[in-house]
Image 1 (cartoon, each protein chain N blue to C red):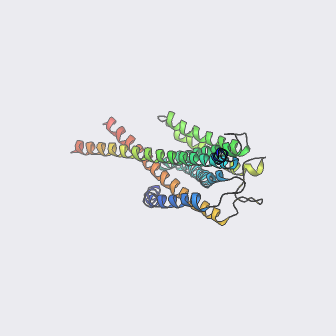
Image 2: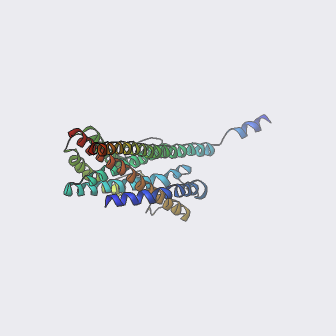
Image 3: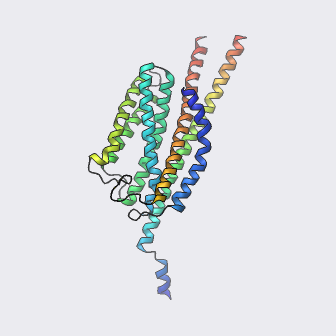
Length: 66
Length: 230
């Protein structure tokens, strides 16, 4: 009984390899998502910040001309 | 011209990215069969190869925009090249990162002195130096010109990276156009094509986003210059 339980709990070499490979696939896709997200988020945030500053300067310029 | 292109890309590309991306992920994880020799780790390939391809495309755009900049000296071309290098570097980093993770499973090492890996690293370093030049020589008038030359040198290196597996001895797998196998199931081909579509939409969208940022930064510099002069 105990031997049977032990046998079912020990993963075969093929299962262990598949699990390791799946883990690597997970890391690879996580890396991709993180890099894409950081790039898109930083570019969007910087564009918004710069646009606000440009609007501010343009408003100041219009006020000064009046 | 760049202005119109940027506006159209920012309108068309973002709605394509999410559905195509989900379709691609579903195909990769639930539809394509597992490759016989490489096993589950081969599923990294579906986003590794398109990342490498669009990074060549982005660097190619950077090279052509740099030539246009050197001929016309219009800041728009310089911004287009700078944006393309930024995006290209991100995809090049994805390529190296995912490739390294795959290599660790398949070869038991994160990195080897293989010809494809070495030439790709040289390409990455050339464009990394481009970005460093843009950061550290921001106030130098000549910086855009030096950067343009650097981008052209990097672009010239691209064919060498692509041909490296044919010109030199390599252990890097050649999955496309491989007479001894590679992707032989039509489902693998479809999954790869969808991934290419995702990456094409992504690279164009991120390029346009970065370009918008650089153009606004340029406009801000002019406005601040005017204000200081007044």
